[in-house]
Amino acid sequence: MVSIIIPTYNRAHLIAETLDSILSQTYSNWECIIVDDGSTDETSNLVCEYIEKDNRFQYHKRPKDRIKGPNSCRNYGFEICKGDYVKWFDSDDILLPNALELANNCFSKSTDVVVSSLEYIGFNKNKIPKKHVFLSQNVIQNYLTGKITYYICTPTWKKEFLKKQFYLFDETITNLDDWDFNLRMLYEEPNVIYLEQELIQYRVHNTSLSHEISKLNFEEVKSELKAIKKHILLIKNNNKANLNILKKRLKGRCKFILREALVQNNKYKFYYLKELLIIEFRLFSFFDIIKSITGFTIYSLFKKGYRLL
Image 1 (cartoon, rainbow, N blue to C red):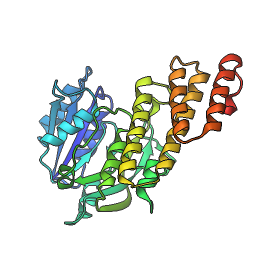
Image 2 (image 1 turned 30 degrees about the horizontal axis):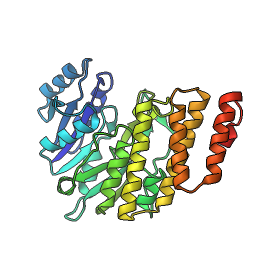
Image 3 (image 1 turned 120 degrees about the vertical axis):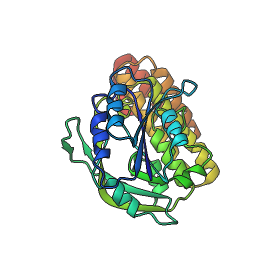
Image 4 (image 1 turned 30 degrees about the vertical axis):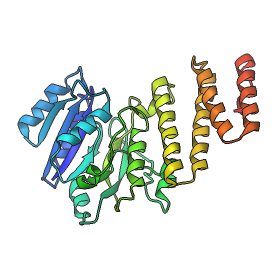
């Protein structure tokens, strides 16, 4: 059995397409566990209609003693799931009809995870001409730096592998949570099978959390920086990748965020400057420290000096 675990929050306008795509699977031995993070729209009523159609659907509300957020919902869904395999999914994405069947056919006794490709779609299901890059000879290094990605939905995990992990989703991270989860699983050196077919339609829209960084949502920015710092410490201990490359990624993100904050005259611009200076100091980039302080000062006073950052 495959357990499809879907966290949701106010997605009544989208989740029906997701659930229809699960109903259309050529592989029938699945359960779909939907965990609601406190929706205030019609999500509950809509999902209950699907449960009446098919008892393979389940609807649960996030327990009140759990932290709000999709990661709490995912962890709770895992605790109650009964499948041999686990597929994390989002409530706005779509499984192509043979997705579960093709993934399941790849599993052997030694396989820990099957990772497939996806296609990008817009809000109205129009295809977006963007290639999903997920294959690499140096998976951890390239995943760390964003050259490849699995997202949350492309892997199908063997439950026995996941049960061996110290913890699954970090409930204190709200941005880069899939990056954090997939990397920690990769550090454990799972036996991975890659499936180059596009089995999922991944929806790109302005309300997704991935767009919150460009909007300078302070909590999401802090979450991203926290996730990268977390893996700097993990890599320092496990030596799974080049530590300086990840530090340089953090530096690049801090510079990008600081530039955006300056242009928008964001109230947290001094916080972002501090974060950039700390990472430049740890990289012994003393000339860059001078450039950052100079660029920040000149732009703040004269709206010039942007290039110094």
